[in-house]
Length: 242
Image (cartoon, rainbow, N blue to C red; front, side, top):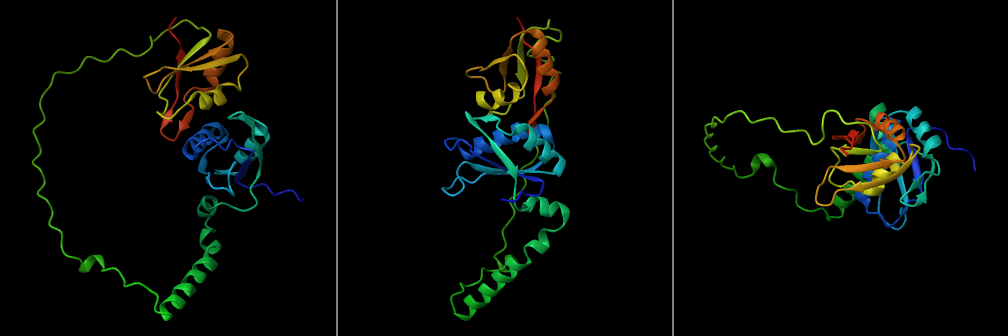
């Protein structure tokens, strides 16, 4: 079989089929965003596509780095198999302006089918245009309540001290609610000395990550500080209070 030419989209297979679609997409984003900006993560939970996904990068260099470094990476207890996708993704096509040409044939076929359906009299009555619909009375805007003057609040004490002596355990903050131990383990186990991840029961958004010693935990903290685990969550890492 001929090699597939490098492109922005990475094809990932041999994935754990027991993982939910949402958890899979979030975990793939977390694992691959270290290589560059991600445009889309596509995972479809059906029989034909089970155990497979696509990660769409903004550029080929990021995709190439991901394929080289994540090949065989243990992901939910199964080694990932990576290759370049055979075709360009819609996200990449939209970015480089080729999306319109790519879908001309599809749109033409759709129009033809609609014309045939109309001739056969199978078309449904058209919806009433929005302009002809009965006017909707706008509700009176509720009067704005006057802002109550309250004394300035005392600044909250940070969850960890400003200065903590280096140690083997890291305190991780600003995590998404859906994060789990497997997602964090995939991020931190790439650093030497990784031991375990511990979530805090009843408290979302924080976790503890333990290494063999403070030197190894320091390397991991430097490597993942402000890592964008989701588009809106940048991890904050510090040494745990002992």
